[in-house]
Image (cartoon, rainbow, N blue to C red; front, side, top):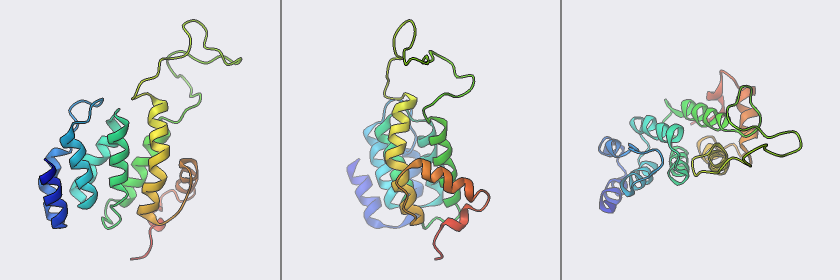
Length: 178
């Protein structure tokens, strides 16, 4: 398995991406197999348009925070894939926004009361794939990936939300002229 990643990555030929694509499927959204982990790592070294959709699917669906962060980091290396860069920004920010903590209308489950308590049953039980864990994982990885993608340095996901909002419909202008 390690040989596959090293071999494909060392070649540096993006034509090898088509051989990598079948391994970028996460069968159980809570578990990341060693093969998936290697494939996501190799995808960083082989930026090709055919790998963007499987990596974005991992970002949107995975509840395993390690593989989620690795997929985000890999997508940050896709600056040369001009046809997919705007989509990468849109999906990363939309995914982060969906799990942003805070009261949202018609949110299901236990609500925190005004005095900070949770009523009967105590606070909700944490899980690896909880919205808070996803939010924290995305807050750590998205700004770095978007900096690599665009060369724009922002320290937080909230700053990226503002940039995306102010450049709505023209996110392509965020990329350096190359």
